[in-house]
Image 1: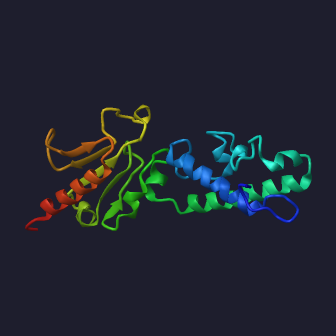
Image 2: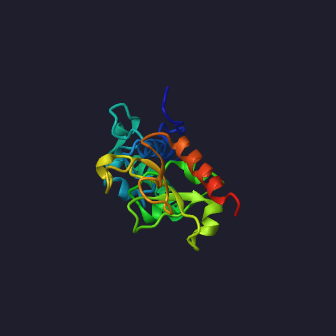
Image 3: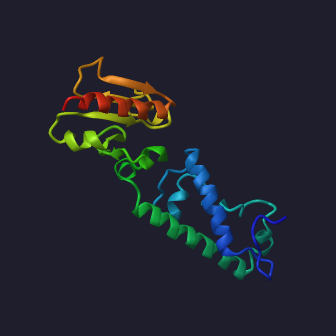
Amino acid sequence: MTKYPVRHDGFWTSEAIAERIKAEVLDDMQHGIQPRYPADFSALHDRVDANCYGNLCDGDCPLLAHLDDQSALDVINAAQEIVERWLKGRWETRPLWAREHPAADVPERLTADPELVDISWHNDTHPSFTTKAVSALETSGIVDIRLWVNYAKIEDREIPEIARYAVIDHNLIDPHSCLFESEDDLGGAISALKAATVNALKGR
């Protein structure tokens, strides 16, 4: 059974190869091998040999028998061009946290939550989020509660002692300002942020 649809002449289509490359790149993003938003195909080479995506370096790749055939190279080049356009499209529409902290790794659950807003800033050590209710008041300094998302790998953190997820009320004095912290409980962090928002806005 072939891994891709093949054309009548026995070559894999560039579109099918491109889809396989995308799937493998996304998997590497999920596992921290690639950043969430590489700027283009050449950026993939910073971490791995990107020419091997799509099983093109596997010994059982049917195209390997035709690498001297220009038509085979054309198929591979066309597939990588498709991936190039896909990566550039993602780069141009990347979220604020990825613009401010390109090396960070923020779970999509945060950006997908309709109650949260990305308030990341490059001068901070890592990305941060708050609720839309808090964001509406933050500029006046009335309420400043944030969910901070530290780098996934401890060795990449500017301050290793800070947990992966931490909810901080910046209007409180330490040690009372940290309302929640965890290395892996994102759901708990989001719940703590929303609960802190409700408590902070009571009676306002």
